[in-house]
Structures are given as structure tokens and as C-alpha cells.
Length: 193
Figure 1 (cartoon, helix red, strand yellow):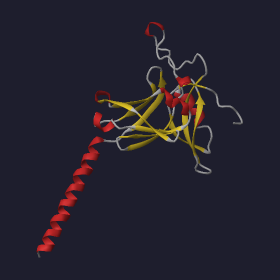
Figure 2 (cartoon, helix red, strand yellow; figure 1 turned 120 degrees about the vertical axis):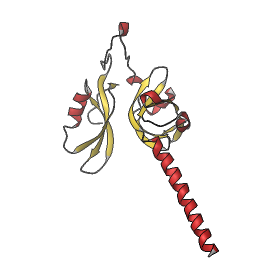
Figure 3 (cartoon, one colour; figure 1 turned 90 degrees about the vertical axis):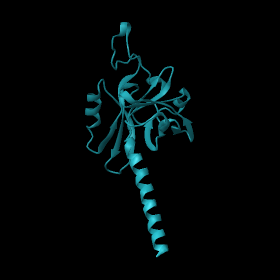
Figure 4 (cartoon, helix red, strand yellow; figure 1 turned 90 degrees about the horizontal axis):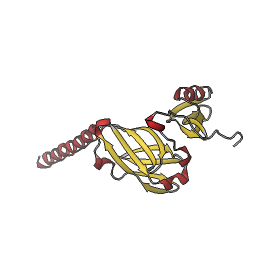
């Protein structure tokens, strides 16, 4: 009888520990990748929409690129439900490649932005210049799944607006659009490469 009571108590304690840790994890919520770009003076910057996370949850964030882990400096803006993570400019040596970000126990696959993608966000006297590119072509990185073989890849799609990029990305019936990134100045894909 004593063994049965001890066993039941152990099971109850074990279940209560699991339920406590599960509810704590659910309180933080889900993080969603909102975009990435290169900002002069900061380096590669990755934006995430999230709520319920504090600075301790994001302090050990890393990005895996070029067969190594690189530290990310992340800040939480609770009033905007935003997490901003930046990597040193050296990460751009892997520009265009896929990086894997580890942030608050979650994993994100990102395309590492290039220094050439940096654009001025404001013109003279604070006027908004939008996505106009002085050099290169305006567009966005689009992640596709090929419905014929299941492969996933990311490609730069030119367009002056997200609507133009979206229309072009949805033009091939064999490709399913998984994600469309933010507009930036890039270069046209070279045919045959």
C-alpha cells in the first residue's frame, strides 16, 4: 500500500511539473519573421513580430552561416511587439545564402542580406523615397516550393512594389509561394546561372 501511494504521489508531482513548464512556454507566444535587410552602421538586421518575450529570452540568439555560429545582438520593443536582431557586417560574406537563426527556443531560416542591398530610407528634408533604387533593381526575396519535386528555394524577384513582386511570383503554376520578403535594392537574376 505504501509503495502504491508513493508511486501515485510521484506521478502527480511529475504531471504538475510538466503542466507548469508547458503553460510557461505558451505564455510567451510565437515569434514570426517579419523581414531582413542590411543597415549601414548596424550590419545585417532581422526583424521579428512577437509578444510576451523579455530581453532574457533573446540574449543568446545566434545565426548559423558558413559552417559557424555567429552571435546576434537582439533587443525587445514590447510596446511594438517587435524583436530586432543584428549581426556584424562580416556576415555579409554569406550574402544570398541561407542562415539559420536560433532565437528564444525557435528556429528561422533566413536569406542573409547583402551590403549592396542597403538603401537610404529617407531623402532630403525627410521625404520618403520608398523603394526607389539608385543602383540595381527594386524587388524582394521570394521563397518557393516546386510542386513537381518538393524542393524549396529562394529567388530575388524584381518589382517596384510588393504587389508587383507577388504577381510575378504567382505567375508559375508549378511553384508555390511560401514567403515574400521586404523590398530592397538587388540585382536581376542572371539567365542560365
